[in-house]
Image (cartoon, rainbow, N blue to C red; front, side, top):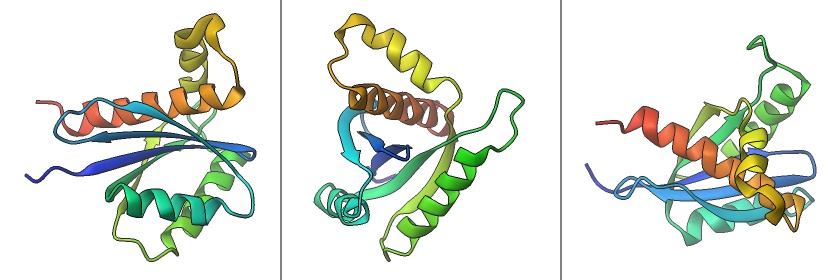
Length: 136
């Protein structure tokens, strides 16, 4: 199977955490964050092209009972906009339950910007996806 580059997005209304990995190494790495503003789709398209991304893993929010929330609806609409970019990448969802809590715990007192939590959460989402999809 050829190596595929993956990009994870932890979508928020203010910021979007970003992480990357490939299917050869299978280690998700935080890659910063993007401000969710009028340029966000252009910024994402540039990342996809620059890093030859073949899979976009998007964190899928649910409440503690596993049911969709208002944020779930926001993320789904955002993914629809990404899909309209006419990109050659598969878009998949990955449960993001408690990833922000885990990210804050991992970073501890070293947090300098809230975007760092978003990027770390994206890396947790991506690592979970890699472990589920490529475990062997």
